[in-house]
Length: 461
Image (cartoon, rainbow, N blue to C red):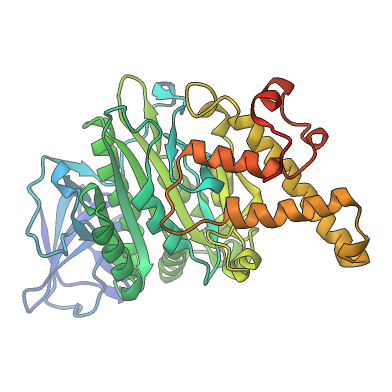
């Protein structure tokens, strides 16, 4: 039986303190009703004897110490899930905000999820095509993988996220398997949220996208629950409905900063850069909700997007994210300044699971060789540019000049592409070969001779 309490003992920022409670549990949801009849949801985040600290999702504005009725529900936060949520837009805690009415849930699920038994996990294989050459060709996204995008303030990560949503598909388009996207935006401005909505609708992909939006002026504590709500729907669609789900979370920096703000309100001792010491475990609890389960057809793949404060890749947010995830895609400010879109910095970017989802039977037999050679040649471009900055381009050897030409063409034609250019993997690999033919055959030392005989032609493009 739910117990109702009258009044609060203290209010501090987004937190309320209730004393004299019995049988309160950590993570339990409470319902609060103000004097004027408004309802607010909260979550118990700290329990000490008969004292409970409640995190109020909609903020504590309008609450007073007297007259607030607080009811403990006896269960953690749950989300009513359904396939009908695809094509709909929700706020950060899963309430519809598109004016199309309530969702009739097929099931109620705990938003904190259930830990996957590591023994039942299946190793990720097949790839997901994004239509972006730099990603598909050099840091391929594999089903069940978590591959973050490290960006910076002012870089076009929102545009890149929207393009991935529009273009993403299973590698084998004729497989007949169902594919959908769960998109969660945390702390975004109104114009950015409108950009996402408008882009998805105009491109015709909105019908297979479930969108969760926490705006910048929404309560901070709501931001902490948004990725968990999105992943709860993703797990339901993947593991109970057999669909392949791509989850895009933007911006995890807003999530971490919300956690820092709430931690500070609770009076906790800060760790690096003022973030709480449990930032790593909170990230892990989100990122590890990706993967494939044996005997189940579906999969959950994650692309978390985060903005690095001051472009510092050693900042705790990208640093801890890199520990947990299987690679990263790094956006570069200098490439963006040269009008290269998407400005993906190839050399520090990688996908650790790429090797197991490409090649014969997945993409094309020469994929791994082409990727290795493009990485190698582009690394040498950096050496040639450094030398040219010292002695001048005219003094370079003919080979170094070819590397400079290769670098320019690689950034313009392979990394750079139109925001509406949806390339398949064959087009991507063919462009790679066109660029490699700019260099002498003897320089291509990362490719097997048989593959060179098949694809390399002496005439330059």
